[in-house]
Image (cartoon, rainbow, N blue to C red):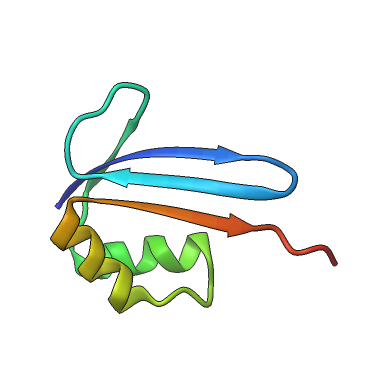
Amino acid sequence: MKIWISDIQTPTHRLVKLNCEVHSGYDYLGDLNEDELKEFFLSVKNDIDVKKNIQLIQYYGYLHLFIINKKK
């Protein structure tokens, strides 16, 4: 699956937008298979529901992930 990405990081959160079509302002992430997608999702957040998010991007063709940076 060809995926383009927009990744915005701030001190409080990270917004990762994935799209299966070319979008202006997005960078080409690559042609990823399910195993590579799984590795990518786990690199974004280690406790993410990988199976659900793979199904969502396959069905809708896009996925937005909002990750809150927890204070230590």
